[in-house]
Length: 191
Image 1 (spheres, rainbow, N blue to C red):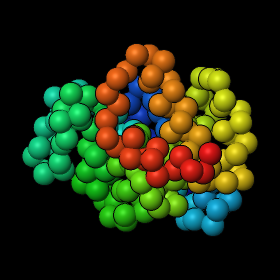
Image 2 (cartoon, one colour):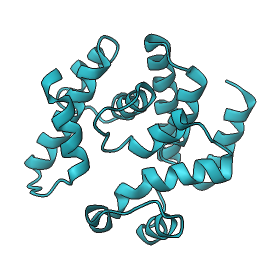
Image 3 (spheres, rainbow, N blue to C red):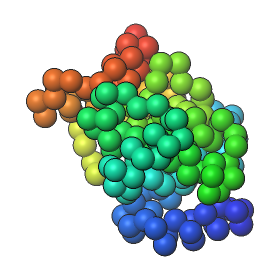
Image 4 (spheres, one colour):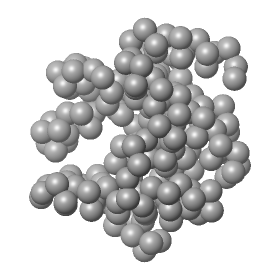
């Protein structure tokens, strides 16, 4: 691991809970493995992985404030569910605090929670890594998703979105937001 990434980890350890940092390190390494498998930049995957949740523990007010002050766009659904803004706010923090400029790092940070239709390979890698990293609590279907991740990343994105929608429906959610539904519509034919 290069020194720059270690410096980021050291800095994040001052601002992040141990559990969140452990998860982010798991995502970083898992994203690196997926990048090797699919021929993407391992360093970019590491950076996006370690930074994907850098704003996750911010208050809802702070997430909204960052997005409003920097014209990052907030949908009505995000305003009702501000925790979803941690990707947009996180990409802003990654750029401003850590000097990240590459869309292959910022895009994956933005879209790691709900995905999006037509994700780039780096976006898919972090989306998948966030779901399958080794520290995740075991849920139904996770072993199959982990196995599929190293065979077919498009199908894995479909499995993850399908899993998330089933989970939300099981929790009684009626409104799930357009972002995840658009992601599902794009990937559902790959199931």
